[in-house]
Length: 80
Picture (tube, rainbow, N blue to C red):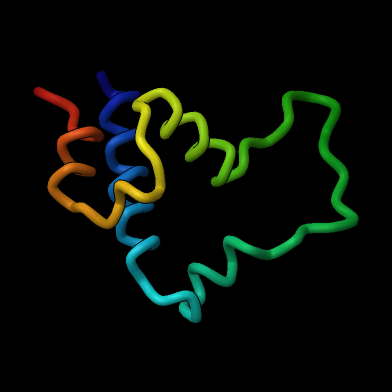
């Protein structure tokens, strides 16, 4: 249940960011290319886009659905 609520909050934030214009700092940070960094030998880090990709595939939603707020909220809503 807690995991589902975290997913809902992440997707609500994603909706908020997607509706903003592209020149805000949040959008620019999401598109930065990180080079020259080495990952540890342990489990690789999860990045924002990887987590969003898994959340959207689990709930079977697309980025286009963000434009219709009512439909988006009904698909990502956690009951309880």
